[in-house]
Length: 121
Image (cartoon, rainbow, N blue to C red; front, side, top):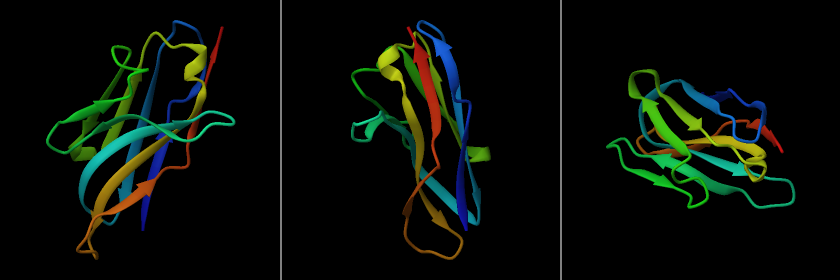
């Protein structure tokens, strides 16, 4: 069984910073891409940033230059450093990972439970 557990969300004023963490645990053989998505009230879930195992990053245009994704492969953990936060960044942030377990020959996509980020103006 695999779990993605996020932490680091909270309430911050506009212009502030937060760092999200997501640790994948369980019977993991290998983790491929990891990333962050977010969903604001009344809106669809959208990509924030992804990071492949070979270091390729993808960012949403709205967060480029403000957010940085990184990972610790030894810990199967992905981070999202969020700087210069804006009220429009308010959302539930979800961790996502493509990984292969010890008993599966193919990669499967997993989601975390989400962590709330609220940016006040």
